[in-house]
Length: 400
Image 1 (cartoon, rainbow, N blue to C red):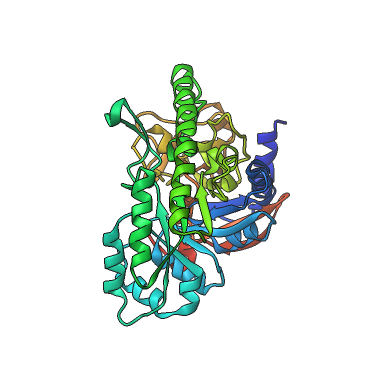
Image 2 (image 1 turned 90 degrees about the vertical axis):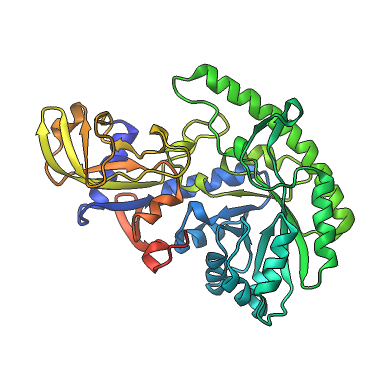
């Protein structure tokens, strides 16, 4: 029996009492992935990216491990909810226009001490001040650096369109603008190199593309390490008490952590290891989060149909954004139908051994987005479900 076949047998036994659709997290794999992230971080703290987990119980499980520290959140409403739930170090990774949230933040000293907000434009300070509604608490601010690699005099850009702040002078100028404005304090700098941390460099069947990605990423790492160090020096000249410099992501943890200027790294997808994180030379994780759909039809030889399953992930539309049939091994989509809203045909010889009601296990393309489809995660240890915990959705929280 292969390792994957053994996992399928365990998951089927563990969830025999549960009707599909159902989502699980294999805690042995989750913990092994967490240990690997810490190993790659080389002693620097790992901040957990909540958008890739979206389950308070599993955020708590990660943060209970020595080496994980703090949360990187994705909306202000989520940040305030987490802070009120007892998480005392929440870094909002994206600028917000949530005026009601800012009014709440600036009126509550406990929230203001627990939550750090992201800015990359002085106009965002004006929005926060206009939203204060009498709140006088000092707002903790993190400045975001654009990490994109610019070539040919800026005519070619590699990397996400995030912050407009690219040079050390631009970031330092914003730090000075914050320092001059009452009610704000710069405490951190963040630089997320998504073109390194979030792009696989070993795509099956694409050797030339994979080599090109590796060459690009090597060049991007060198350029960013030098520029990030210069940015931090420039900001520290304005803010000597800077608390943290955050960088990286699951695919770049060890490279980012090796930079002297970086004080902490961020990661989240590496805990669940969705299918988009299979194509890396820098690490090998264990799939920890899966979902199962039930077989509801047997339309012919070498074919079964499961309920639902059309859960595409965000990003540029393509086959890599679809869930992948994982267990039993050897199933594939019907190219004329793909993953369906209500039903999904699957082809392959393993279909002939599946009965009505059997489970087919899938892996989602992106980590936390799976939790927007399920209100609970069943936590599996060995061949038993040992706990069932709510996702954000299960707690009535759908922040985006």
